[in-house]
Length: 208
Image 1: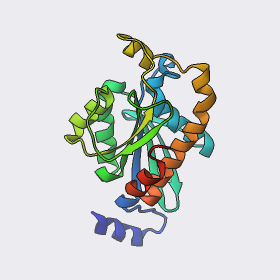
Image 2: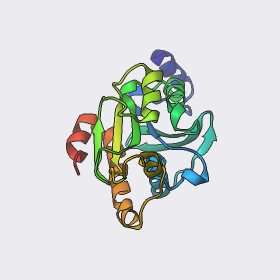
Image 3: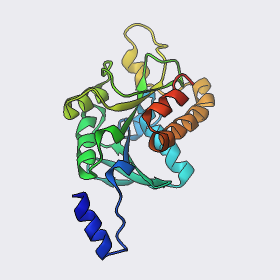
């Protein structure tokens, strides 16, 4: 396949050929619809929207998700917000990995995490779904727990039996005051993931 693309490139200089290892799929998890827009569970969408606003990127609705493309230093980042709702996120992830011929190690999933303090960021290369339905479906569709995920802490400041209300609730004014700085940190993590690799990025960002 790669040799074919090179032959095609030599015949037509106007066609841009991108090596698969230089392409990355960055998936922000969330639920579509106005009522979910500012909820804690939609932090994956919020990170990608923040990045897009900074870089003046435009999302376009395509199959199974909203897509935007960002290029940096020879790398191509494909941002994807699934429109399948959280519980079927894996369907969109698998489709776009396959369509763009992106290797699994170049996938990064951004998700909320109840087990981390608010605003904490932890990048991992594998792990369980932790009861998160979006991660559970991705694990099922990819048939592996070994994929990169950036967990954004939303804390566990809810009373017994109120987890769903808390996760699907909106940010407090105190959280909103601090949110932009943490979103900025997440956008820098995405860039580092593509440029410096997952291990260097973990060393630079985890716990900060």
